[in-house]
Image 1: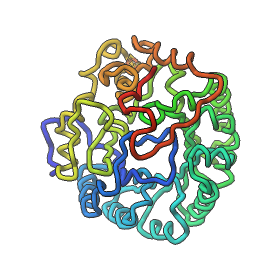
Image 2: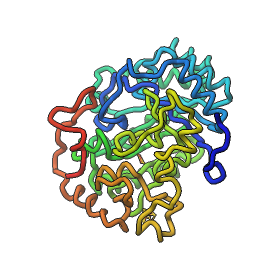
Image 3: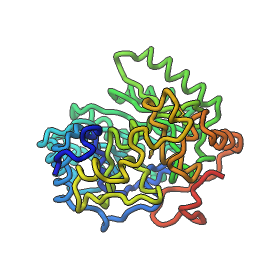
Image 4: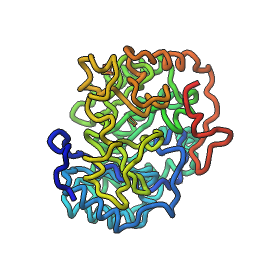
Amino acid sequence: MTGPSSHAHAVEAPMGLLAELTHRCPLRCPYCSNPVELQRAGEEMDTATWKRLLGEAAALGVLQVHFSGGEPTARKDLPELVRHAASLGLYTNLITSGVLLDGPSLALLADAGLDHVQLSFQDVEVESAERIGGMPGAQARKLALARLVTDAGLPLTLNFVVHRQNLDRLPRMIALGLELSAARIEVAHVQYYGWSLMNRDALLPSRQQLERATAEVDAARLRLKGRMVIDYVPPDYYAARPKACMGGWARRFMNISPGGLALPCHAAETLPGFDWPSVATGSLAAAWYDSEAFNRYRGTAWMPEPCQGCERKEIDWGGCRCQAFALTGDAGRTDPACALSPDHGIMLAAIEARGEAPPDFIYRQYGPPPGIKQSAAKAP
Ligand code: SF4
Ligand code: FES
């Protein structure tokens, strides 16, 4: 099952497995990283299949499992899956909105061997947070859960997805991390594909907002050295070079969708022309090493110019394939976030076209968003 394939000499095992247990979630964030076409409960893999996949992941060499969604705590079998992963020696991280957990359910997870909790906040200001997440009452539940997590002795990371409608409160986000005894906070600018691309004008910050935020992060990192780690993911639209999305296509991470498709990232399902391997029936090792889909953009051989002759090609791996597709219609092009890309002007035009006032959000929901076809989720 995990024996070496013809690619094994060149391809390392994935370090992390992103187990998207479900797309169900009580929140409706307009930047959700789930695909626009969400899977329903009846399409989710069962407990036995997930346990088999966790076993295969450990045998393959995976070190960390990130239980994610949707909201992974919507799955009643989460403690059983955490216990199974822990028994295999896997490091277990729960990526949660926190709104479905209380003391007893957290205790079950801690008892099962959960190693870490990553708790998302939509903002620090209650009214804004609950408007962005589309769920009244969510903020108090998150704050209560954060305290339960640290009381249970579990390491806590707060995750803030930042954008034009909350970025000005960054200092208060950092202060909340300290107040809640978080070991780490992650401040991540929205990445634009799927839901967030449809909401780009409502989310894209101004250059002034970004410059102020970056300076605030730099100052806070110095001030809080040794007390709290601040991870900062800057926005591609104001960058001159792209990020190594997922650490490079099919290099470090494998994502499993609720229905059992193996993907190199959470957004890849939206790319057309791929035959994504099913691990509901097939093996993780075959998907990782042998599938055409994983090998298509692995390494550097596929790269067009200017990447092919570029000294950064093994640093950023040509950026993000999903962003390249979302903006150019071709996943095989250089990420337009790169100033050397012939398509970089698409990003500059989007910044230029950004309106003074943000439009209303298009919230995440099941079924097609009103008036918008999935294929229309492209840059203007
Ligand atoms: Fe990265 Fe390609 Fe831009 Fe070079 S040309 S910096 S490899 S995206
Ligand atoms: Fe798919 Fe970047 S999100 S490659």
